[in-house]
Image (tube, rainbow, N blue to C red; front, side, top):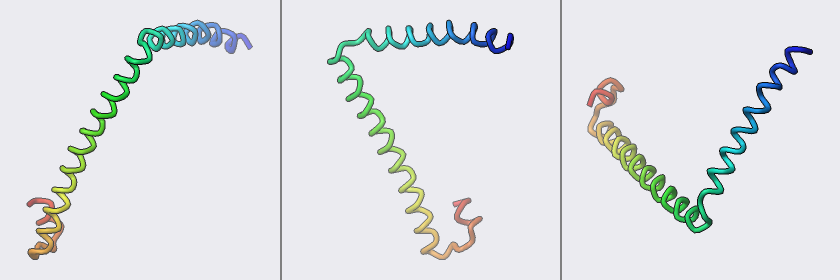
Length: 80
């Protein structure tokens, strides 16, 4: 029983500190600033997704082209 209360006595102040810190961070920005942050974040991750999609699509097309040209061996495809 003593260990449980000891762990709780360390956990409660930590949770309170973290919660207060998060609330003060969230309360720091106005609604309009949060809208701008949300839009900028959406555009940023959209661009990252676009670049990743183009990269993997080019890899897929290269592998399909190699298979079409007769490179049936997987080692030839991976090395090319």
